[in-house]
Length: 193
Image (spheres, rainbow, N blue to C red):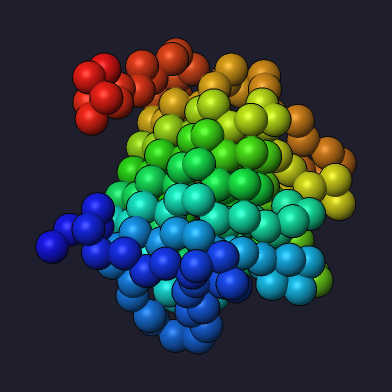
């Protein structure tokens, strides 16, 4: 079975997956229909510590106040995944030093990625070989206004490129090599596209 057919469904009654602590691994699932709130961040997945999220489809989750469909804290790794069609921010890095690689973040109702501080811990994720495109508020990567966060981006497709990302006092945008800002021309083969 693959991630398309192995589904963990939250049935719109709460967060779908909660991963706290050491080196937990979640791989080869669809995570869908989770709900969150101000006190329940990460409606699809909340992951902290050294969690690894691999080969997932995270879709159709809802949250409020920018608390994200995926909430990453600590040194989590998110790779080879789709974060699509969620009703909130796709991925929130909350004081996280995460690695996000080979991930498509698209068609979410708020930002694709939002960087927040957790107490005195600022976020500083690495984004590589990924697509962040067509998120509804046109803030594909958003820094929280508190300042002090950073992101390293390389070999990725970011809609409207470097100029579309607003930084605040003490924020750092490390725009590496190999980034582009062209339309990825997503296809829907199931519908004949």
